[in-house]
Image (cartoon, rainbow, N blue to C red; front, side, top):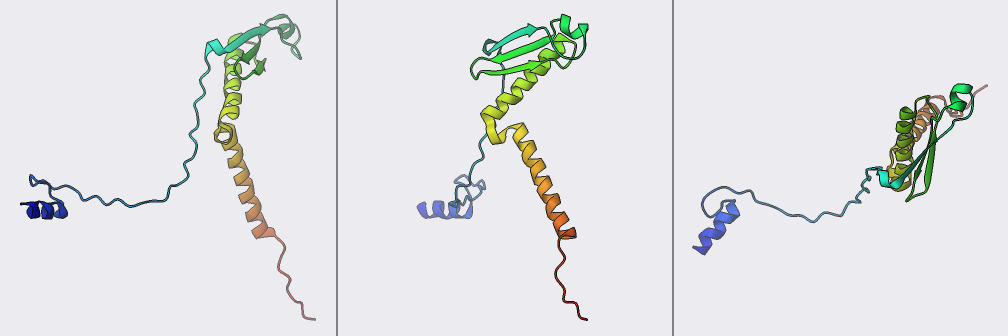
Length: 146
């Protein structure tokens, strides 16, 4: 009985007759795992949001109204000011977006969106320079016969 059981397992059959796949486990070298990018979530408890009068070009519309947003992240001490539009609500949204980007750069480092975008641009620039060098680079010195 034991011998029949062992031969059944070697053929890929289970004891009750159903076919089971044979598994072969091989040892693989551990590949380096890329660090996982953390998602940035802003919580209202961590923020101090103040509204101040704007400054700069725009005259009375800018200087008189309170439409500039000053947003501070308490745990990290990052500060963002936004006065891009005349609307207070739009400036609040833009300030939060800018603060998320700054936190992403601070926390994730090379895995942040801005760092990945900069790396992509640098790679494209290097590729273009390499192709230009291949196409227009110094010609090889040829011996001229006179």
